[in-house]
Length: 263
Image (cartoon, rainbow, N blue to C red):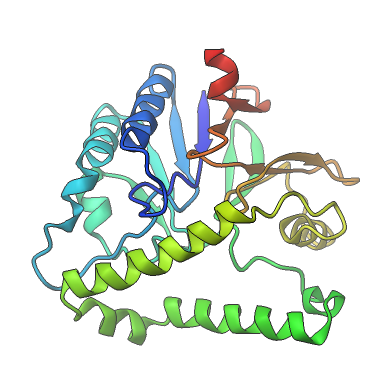
């Protein structure tokens, strides 16, 4: 069985749940019993950054890091796609855990199915901005410029020079505000004609067909079949909904929820 998970946001200063990380570790350990591969589609940590300085701040993540190392040591491939909260990994995460880090969307064949995998941030159709009024377009462009800055190699190099205590204070505070805003006013499914990742998949299908588009990022659970036969799957999250996807050896994919399994 192949499993897909995203958006655990472990370490969030906006969520007061001391068992959150251990619960995620327990889920990974349960899935590992029959897993042939595990795909983590971003934002597993609420903030992750690697510095040039000696850094002890990752000690709080030891349970999940040890779990990931245990999975890869047992021969289970773990693919880690960076999200918008864990962009700043440059080798330390892979070295510590043995995960395979992906920094962009990837096309993969899994169980005979052609899949496009990504966290999902920044994936929008070419005419996306046109559907919004000008004031909204301005906000979206501001976000896109910020995203470009976060991915800029020079900006990343300079941020690595910052002492970990300073960098983490800035990063966790930024992530906290983002999480508080989302928790207070969650953005549900916008509908097939407005959901960015669905529109992106529809445009992609005009030039290349995929069996599955599998994303994280949006914190909604979605399994939508397009006219082309492709399925757009958004995984939900692993801090509130506790949803994930499983694909069997025939390529059948199903969204699952641990609350339903434990009830």
